Length: 81
Image (tube, rainbow, N blue to C red; front, side, top):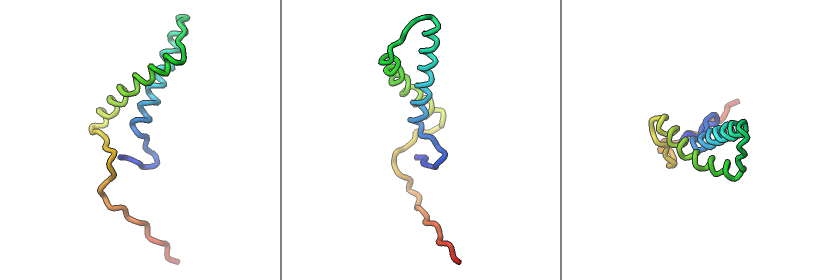
């Protein structure tokens, strides 16, 4: 699992992408005067997010594992005066 400070978990990325897609979908429907209740929009995010997550994980080339890394952690050396 990539836990470096600059990385974004694929689950968070898929939720953000799904949320953005639904916002655009709601906006387009509002242009045609079709109201979409917030409950339906939230349900659409929950339906789209797993599909986006699958696309992200397949595009990265490998499935991400939740198991910890087997590499040994190295403690930083203390500064000497």
